[in-house]
Image (cartoon, rainbow, N blue to C red; front, side):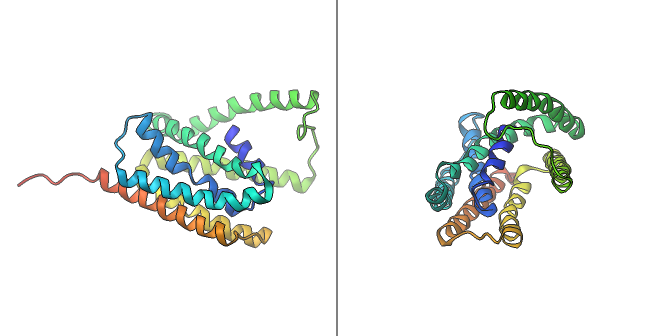
Amino acid sequence: MFGIAAMFSALRYLPLADAVAIAFVMPFIMLLLGRYVLGETVGPRRLAACTIGFIGTLLVVQPSFANVGWPALLPMVVAVIFALYMLISRQTAKEADPLALQAMSGMLATPVLLLVLMAGNLADWPGMTLVTPTKSEFLLLASIGVLGTFAHLLMTWSLRFAPSTTLAPMQYLEIPFATAIGWLIFRDLPNGLAAVGIAITMAAGLYVVYREGKSLEPVPAEA
């Protein structure tokens, strides 16, 4: 809930491609959490790639921060929260049914969000005023619910049937897709510095994925 709220808030201030690219510091955070929390082995090359990828993310953040201020850091919050979410999903997806997992998440989130909305409305917090959506807004909200649910189910199923090293490179397709959609719908494109940062982040992330794949390859048995 906090991660999605932070991402929605970021999209009010940042171009789609910038917000997604900044949030893609998540794989580097997952790698560090794997080393320092789960005790996984992470070599110096992957640590160096993490550092380079983080520098690339800062190149995306810098012009955004200059334009909008602290909201440019919201995708970083998203990255930390979803890194923790993915680590938990890795453990539960192996044993729990994806449909049951998704349904339980929604059942837990709905009453909590209703309580937050009611409290915010009573306290007159900014952005918490109840508004009746128009017909077109309702259709957009319904589309968000359907697409979001389907996307989460696909992610949960993929974690159940395929190793993360196979899936991780496909996640980076989200950045060019976000860039294309942002341009087609909102006519937003990353500026020069942000574009360089996006390229560095993608390259570092793909290198991390490559090294993880190499580390998981079985050692040939001696003759």
